[in-house]
Structures are given as C-alpha cells and as structure tokens.
Length: 576
Ligand code: DON
Image (tube, rainbow, N blue to C red):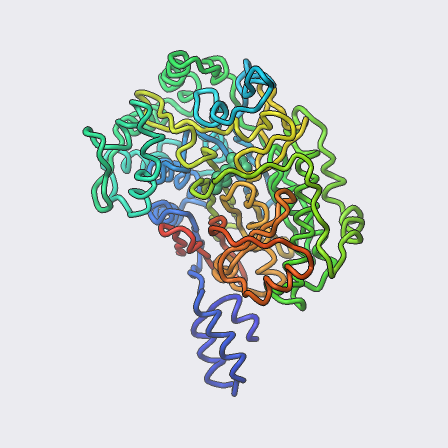
C-alpha cells in the first residue's frame, strides 16, 4: 500500500494511511520524501513540457476537446516562439505516438537531412583534420529542417485540428509577445557573442542598440509571426517550396551554404517502426534509427533486467556499477554500428536481443570496473549550456505523445534566416566529421555515421513510451546530447525498479557513462561513501553539471501524473 501510494503521490490517500497505521519512523520518512517530489495530477490528461506557456497551451487544447496529438503539435509550435534556444521550426526531431485503441505505436522521423551536395570530408581541412567550427557555426552546419513537415504529418495522421488552428497560439505569442522569464534573458545574455555575429540574429534577439532584453520585458518576433502565418495560410509545403523556402535558399546562397531550394523541396518526414523491447513485463517503445536512443535504451534495459536492481537499491554503489558497465557496452556499440538505416545496415535485432544482453552481462565483473578501450578517445568539449527539448502529453482517449526536437546546440548555428525570423540548426555536427573524431558530446562515430548526401545524421534523442498490459503507462524522454539515452533509462528504472512516483523519478540525481571518456559522470547528490566504493572498484567518478530535463507523464488507474523536471526553471506539468 505504501509503495503504491508513493508512486502516485496521492496526498489524501497518504493522510489516510498515516492516520490509520502506526508507521515506523523510517516508513514515515519515506512517505515524506515521496511528498517532497509530488507529481501534478489530472483526471483527463496531462502535458509536461519545458515551458509553462507551452504546457498551458497544450492543456487548453485538450480541455477544448482536442486530443494529445493536437496538444503536442500546438505545443511544438508554441515552443518555437517561447523557447528559441531549442524549440524550433529550423531544426528537427522525433515523435512517438501511441494509440491504445489500435494498439499501435508509430514513430515520426522528422530529423534533418544532409543537403544533396554534402560530402564526406566537408568538415575537414586540407590536412584531413576535422574542423569543428565548420560543422557548428557556419551555414553548412545546418541540415534540411524537418520540424514543420513532421508536426504537420502528426496532425494529419492523428489530429483533429487544422494546421492553422494548431499554429494560432504560436502566431499570437510571436506577434503580441510574451513576458520574458529569467531563463530566456540569461540564455540570450550567455549567447550574445555568438548570435551577434549575424545581423539577422542580432536584430531578432537584441535591442536596436545591441543591448539585452531583461526578464519581465515583452519579447515580440514579427518576422517569425509572418512566417508562421504563411504556413498557416498555405500549409506545410510553404516552408519547403514557398516564400520561406526562398528566404532560406537566399540565406544559403549569400553565405556559400550548400543547402538549396531543391533540397528543401525534396524534404519529407518518414513514419518508422519504433524499437520495441520488454523490461520486467513492461513494453518499451523508443526511437529507431537514425536515432541510437531506442536501440541502446532497450539494450541497457536487457542487460540490467538480469540484476535485482530494486533490491540493490537506488543509486547504491552496486547499482551504479552495473548501470555504468551496461552503459559502456551500449555506447561502444553505438560508435561502431549506428547510423541512418536508409544508408547503412544496423544490426538492430542483435543489439536489442535478450541473448546478446545475456552475453554482455556475463562479461560484467560485479566487483570490478572494466576499463574502456581508450583508442581514439577525445576530450569532450564543454557543452553544458546546450539544449534540446522534450515534451510528454497524454489524453483520456488513449493517445500519448512523446516528442524530442532540437536545433542541436542552444540556438543551433546561431544563424537566423534573414527575413524569416527563425534560427537554423547545427545538426550536421552530429555526423562523424572524420571517423574516430568525437563530436561536441564526446561521442565517437564511425563509417556508419559519415557524411553522405541526403543522409540523416545519427541522434541520441530517445522519445520513449512504456506500456503496461496494453495501456499507455510512462511517457518520457529528455534533452542532454549523449546523456539523453541514459537519462531516459534512469526515469524508466526509477519508476519500474524503484517504485518512484513520476516527479521523484525525474528529480533524483542521475549518473552517466558513455564508454569514452572512461568515467562515471554524476550529478550532485550522490554520497561520498558511494563514490568511494565506486572508486575502490576501479571507476573514475566525476561530478559535473545537471543532466537532461525529462518532462514525463505516468498514467495509472485512469489518473494522469506529471513530472516536470526541476533542472529547468520554466518546466511545467499541467493536468486537466
Ligand atoms: O540529436 C542529438 O542527439 C543531438 N543533436 C541532441 C542535442 C542535445 O540534446 C543538446 N542538448 N541538450
């Protein structure tokens, strides 16, 4: 009863339990801890996003009779206005939609594509060395954006709103403006040098004299409003074939970018089969290639299923040890095998099979860290301020949406399309500029992820939906570059293995290992005793900044529980 109550964080039920049972002090303490992170509740649906305005808009859509997909698409466009560091129309992402009624989970792949003129060595100098400046901060850093086509496809498949209706709140926010939260002002302050290099970016994000907007002021984006209005009036192809496409093509031409009007006209999102696995009787669906997320979350869960994680305890040294060992092995496979399956064969069946996990588990020494292969390991560059954004939405018609989309770095390449008012992504940096050279997240890629024309660059984005006995149960995912897969893994484990309510599951400290560099990265809040035990097993442990922002929804017994990640000050979960 207590474990049940903790997961749901139902305050009334808790009070009843406390009033009627003579609880031991430790059990009372456990309940108090559950209360410290109590989730938001709803009877008919839940929206958890990284921005309170987007969460409110999504909830309002469902309150007015729209479904979870209507809410997700509307929130996706609203985030492009309210959170330009990651919300976008100039980037791309992945959306999982689970429809309980048809028992189907589909994945919409709206990842960016390399332009047709892209080539393998485009980010190398004459000596054949990778030049990160080229893949991150130039017009060639951008893949052909997928967001507008992807969100429109979701609406066509499952929505009840028209595209114009789904765009209306975003247009209003861009035109009339919104009050700037401190996080927005701080982000633009920190990115000023990078964004100010470009006239169009400076004009959108800074005042006429170049000074900063302050929290509390109103922020308006007239060019973006005009772009969104054109899309509302003419449909999604306007972005790819209309005036917006012309503006992008002109921007590219002016700065020797490879992307052309033909690349834009040729862009199409794709419906894919998500990766499916099971974990302790739950069905886990997550994003398939060109994301590595689904393959490796299922692989790690398969390895970890062989241990009594609940019994070993949350973030105990033994638990962190086996998690790290599973993570190392998954990320080593990622570097070797993962890429866009439209171009390369990825051994997905093998990576996600229980038998392969058994074999990998046998290699794990329970008392000793296995040193990672150090070949070609590079120092990951600082990437703490980068941001992608994830949102999770569910309704009481059995629809659930898990969406992660991004510009790659915060504010992408930093380049606004002149006259169109939106930022371009720098997703081309997710290709391996040169096999063996790490990208911005320290991730090594091989041949499978080399640059090729029209190819999608490998991603770590892991929108995930866990089902229990055929019903949508947990909807989660996260930003965080290389740490996305392990962050999402821990939310799933916290709920299933450690019986946490969804708010606790997203709030508690996380750990991460990505094979190279050979270290367990931890957030603050892991005890020094535990760190000491891990070091005695041969691990290097390094405490660094917070990881991810796993906006999540949990559904049980017809109740909707939302966990907004406290790692972002604007996060919000709202029920209805
Ligand atoms: O697709 C990927 O894996 C990366 N472009 C995601 C970047 C990211 O999550 C940045 N921030 N947190």
